[in-house]
Amino acid sequence: MPETKWRALDHCDNHNKHDADVDQENVQKQVTKQISNEWIIVRDSEDVEVTTTDTQVALSLQLGIQAAIVAVISITIGDNEQGNNVAQDLKQFMKTKQSNKQKTIIEGSKHVKVKTTDTDIAVNIQALLQILVAIVAKLDVL
Amino acid sequence: MSERQEAIPNKVVDLLVSEVFRKNNVNIDNAKSKLTDEQKRAIRELVDELKSQVETFVKESPSSKKE
Image (cartoon, each protein chain N blue to C red):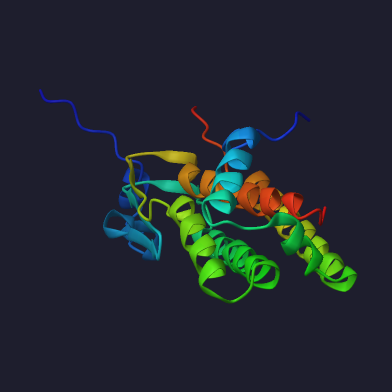
């Protein structure tokens, strides 16, 4: 006799409780931000807690640091060809991998906590900050 | 708590920035002289704020955990 597959929501079926909570089989969540594409699929599960990196915060931090670098260059070297060339060269290091793809599937589970992190973003931001700090240190600002 | 690890060794970043300045014939002393005390203060504050924002972000980012 084939063994019946355990399903987290079996007890809900037994009680004929077909409310919204039971419809998790089709629950899919896609978090798509400008620099991240993350899929978290929760299927046939209950009590699942998901935490992900806030890529929107990361993006605004990234833009903030880039703007600061350009501003410092513009003030010290000038908004001229030389300043533009320096900014252009620095941008070569600032080019970051703009894509993060990860897929998390939680199936047939209960009481699960999931944390995903986009380490690329965290490292990129730290590197950008290092460039800014190096520039201002050279200019004796710090 | 241990010191936050650098994304890239500081010496490498320093070398890269120096090289960009050298390549573009930037006179560092001349560039320094263009900054007023007021601007220096503003830049310092800006950098400090960005630093603390980055630290908060890195600290709050969930670390990978296996159970």
